[in-house]
Image (cartoon, rainbow, N blue to C red; front, side, top):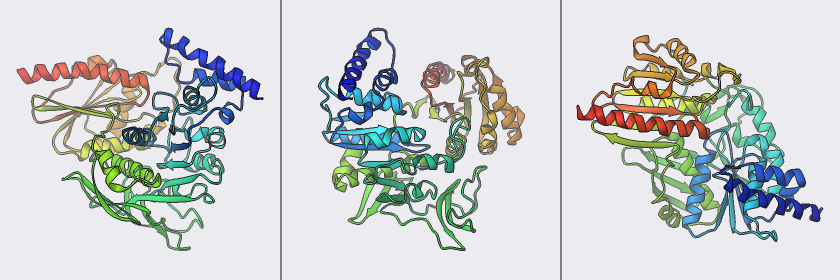
Length: 459
């Protein structure tokens, strides 16, 4: 078997320079070759001394990037798959790149993003020391169905000594693999919290233990919050790492754990990104790092521009905001964040903008799980639907109560930019999907929007 492994190692390594010469990305291909030649490749390939994996429906890329950046700033040689795929073949490609031709590790620590459905094909072989589960929500209906279905993939996937870092505010993901050692993070009550769910999706209506009545002390969004069963007493777990005194105005948050409290600078005013930052801090603490050292590492951090990018042109803000297509929760979070900002807004909705209408058969019912109703806010003065799903977005907006005179529908993304009004004092948001092609299109459209904004400012 070792002979077979080394053949797989050497042959698959040869594919990497070939892909570079032919200008192919190849995020999966070398790993696919390796596992084709040796199905147990992940079992034998050299690995760093410590391995951290990050999984969950939303936030895993952002959390992985934050952890990588902090560890690299601290002087570690970090193996990661931030430029590649998060399925088993993508992980294999990253591990391959991190091993020498004699199968020796090049790095001292690995931070790997892992797709939930690939968990059973990754975790038993990679054997992480720490695994973060950010949350579990309803995702693409073509792949991930319901969060309980995805939870079943994760249960039993982890080696028994893998320590889990879990979101205590999510009663679905916090119950994953109950036999494993674990710590919990969460954010204490905020002024914007509610009790009743205001979202279309509410995937935790009853107690996951006895199916009795579940009462929320407070709810942040969807099923995220603190709850207790009125019948059996089951409740949200206590925090090991608590985000408290969140001050959006002054962009600060206090993190409290067993050693005391320490104030941090917020990287973003988005609640989703506050969770991401808290998660990364909890991981650093689990690695034995003290708060002052972590605080210094966060000073230079920022949310990557592929997720969020803002620039002011004249009297208008042009903002790129990722909004995952086929993911009702991620889009709802983006809509809620945008409408929560002060002032008037124009939106260019271009999620799922590059799907081929001929051979793409996505079920668009995710649009009806998504809270387009947020966009009926009077300060959202103009919405432009574009891309292959432009008419689907247009219909959904009308059903959500957005007045028809505020909505335009333009099939071509570049032509859609011409419809923007650039009202003085307003903000223009480009909402785009998560895949690389959508990101490329979004940046290209942004260039035209910036040019048009400059022309409007000069008039």
